[in-house]
Length: 124
Image 1: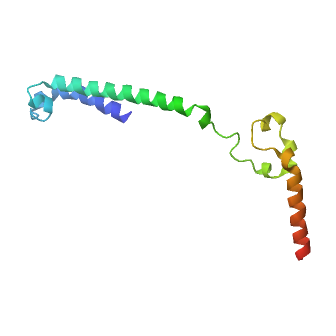
Image 2 (image 1 turned 120 degrees about the vertical axis):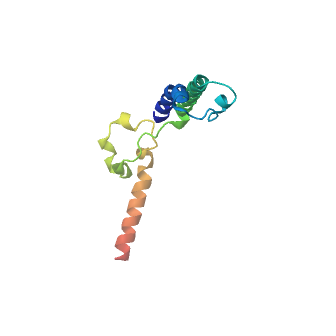
Image 3 (image 1 turned 30 degrees about the vertical axis):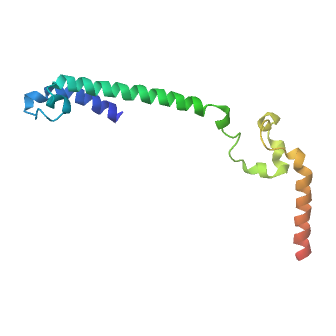
């Protein structure tokens, strides 16, 4: 927004520069015999080009980012997901399409639990 405001302000102010004894060769276009009005037109044309390019590349980037490959994970972090006995708290639809398949690995988790309990009680 500041750039757009600056470009519009300069396009309005530039044509008045000749009245304020501003150096005629300050801009390349006026040094080559052009007018301040032509310089203002060049400012507006460059603003238009910038806006068109930024909108086009933004739309393209948004299109790319909206593809399935860039989809966010189902849940970034749920602390109780790391405890298999809490899985009953969630509705089944909440866990569909995720990597939390606790029913498939519950026996492995039970084995790990019993192993660690044996280690703790055996080393006491």
